[in-house]
Length: 100
Length: 395
Image (spheres, rainbow over the protein chains, first blue to last red):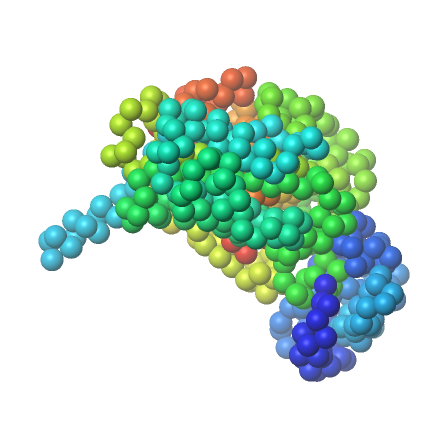
């Protein structure tokens, strides 16, 4: 996980340009045994999304219901807090996907 | 010009021989330290070769996690101490393909005639750490995007499993047959972490890790070490039942799964394997026995297709039909039990595969012996397919 403020600052520029991008779920899984930073959020879905310009992106799916987990489901990129595990660390925001 | 041609052909023709090979027991080895594990594997490989440590020119160590888990990034020098000599030593990492990459680099040093006889060690000590620490450490093999998506190593392979099941109409039960086969093989291997059989029903009812992968689709967290002594042909005259490494090929791909053209095939494996077959002058059907990197059940299903053992889309079904199973299949895969049953100490795996194939070709594999095995292959993959090392061995 990112702990360096410099690295975080460098990434912010590219992250903000992704907000609002739309696409369709290509593949999905539900992570039930997460890495350390995501322990509080499991289980959560991770999806590969084909975005409109044709490239693929990977991200966490938020605000989801069971029926959203299907190939072809339309989603949009939103800015969300990355994880809530480390209470005293930098609060880091990243792109996640939300069903449309 | 003609002289130049001669030199080229000498380089092309690989004549690396294995003088000694040994692996420790794999498993949850809480009572031993990494040093002890390394020493055991190296000493036994040396004893098998009939050589003394003082006859070894260099040590190559395959290891992934010593930096992250052990705060140790001077592993070559640390482990060479256990040999009681001071020789050039290198630690080589490429995620779970670290062992295969270490061997590839050791072979290159022999081909360049920098060294005459070298020792290659693969080692990993994982069970000293908690599950979430290990899950986190293993994702060091992934990309920033994957890590920040909260994807795990099983998660990335689960996405491949979803893609495979969609494309080829395979069922979770088809993937489960990989674990059933490898656990069956593990019952014949006294060094294996798990020496008990499992059924398709056991796999299906095991707890979910990342849908559709369940606990028994996944290789375990393990400790273990394996070592081989290798040399150029001119330095290996005395060995009985000599096994040759006739091809050693490495290829890479994008770190991220989602950046790849295909999600149901690993192009690094296809490329390294096709180069290896070409160098060895053989075809996939000539292989008698193979050690496959089955970090997850889906990995072996895809691997047997990428290696040309099975038709595209039929890898899992062929495994279910017994075509890769000891005593009844045509190309036997993972007689050791594979990563699933033998265990997967990540840096050690690539070298353990070589040890297993060496024993198989020498006819010394005991109860799990593949009859009349003459040509063997090892398939070692790092990350979700970002790097692959393929070796072909023959007797």
